[in-house]
Image 1 (cartoon, rainbow, N blue to C red):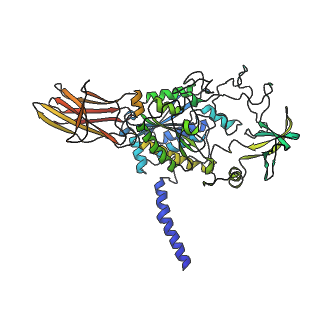
Image 2: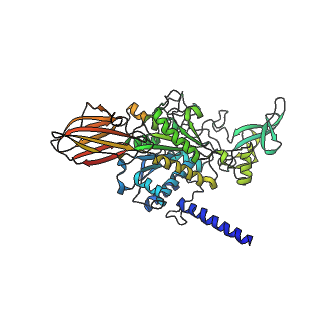
Image 3: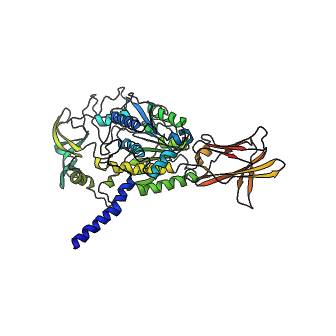
Length: 575
């Protein structure tokens, strides 16, 4: 009898809790477009997936290229918009990109997952449907397709190739990319070289795990020396691997606080020198409706905001309140991630992309560093051997190359082995989909927080003699203002504008902003063009703006509010 009761109770729990959970995820067993999110994709595969998505949902999706990479690959960008609810330039938009560094690959999968999830769940999940109807998504999965393909299709470490592939003379010997690392054992990764020696060694076998070396104590004789990453002296200058492919950093070449190479290596000869970064800057400038920016990097588990350098002033207090609320919620949504300031909590970055978006364009912008090694065992109590244990117990040894003999032209008999390029910075494939979903959800929070102005109270009061007072209120219930305080202070973009039109006999006699509440209201008069009111500070976060016109004329009165990031509101008022 007790067994039957346990079975009945288990059935009830599964039905009551699990079934609704499955329904709320919006995930179907038969998605319209099949995409595996337990693997990574190269640039050609990304393009094929994007074309399939557009073909499946042509009403909402528009695929285009905003430019070409150094090697001529398309910079694919997908626009998501519901044209039935308005053109894209009348809605606030979020721009999402990834993979500016060639080896930081998983952000592209987050972008693909975001596009796929939006469409698969449109009309099924209310929150997703509202996002597609009310917002615009501009999604560029790979900023650096050349570096991405080089990382996938050539031997690398987990940290190379960060660069693009335009040749650079990194060692300043007059030659370009002439001495890269070499995949001597042909396993597809650049691992490490070590040599056993009779005397003078700096390391010995770890007594607890002879796959690894430990440094000997002072006065102790070691059996091994470490020779660095796999490679040979390709150019015969006595050094190894000193001039690999590329050697620049596109996340140091944006205009805000750009610094030359002698201050920050890899920035290029001038801002936006690389065609990929120039194409993105042109796109952002051509789309002033972009009110939010998200860029995906790896790794470390971080939600980063600017400034990138201490020499750049901290953001205005009103903007910090927006960043802090989003960042703190992001920490809750993304376990093991920390909300951080780039220059203060990480390191100095001059000419970074999110700094340009925030400080140069006035857009609320974040960089997420995807994947934290602390996620491996899902707990906060980390142990020194977690990486080894995760490889051995969970990944069945997939991340570590056993040491094998090799005859090296310079060093003689050596061994090659160690951690391969998949062993850090990217999640193991079975953990990729959760990473995609959680980070997508953070961008959804960001997108929902973009400004969405709406009319508040309006009134028309007859003052006699054909003169009327028109009062209007615009509210912004969302977290992000229609114009950030930084944008207002730097006069970035156009201010929000209010206009009034009427019959040919309409005359605007006075205008001003209304502050306070009755009976202590104060009118701040406008002395310029009374028919066009400029809201230099926009509509604040979760706030409102009230104003009035004193007009002469019978009406009706056509009032229009225009905001680059808040869209357009129109209203007709009868006398």
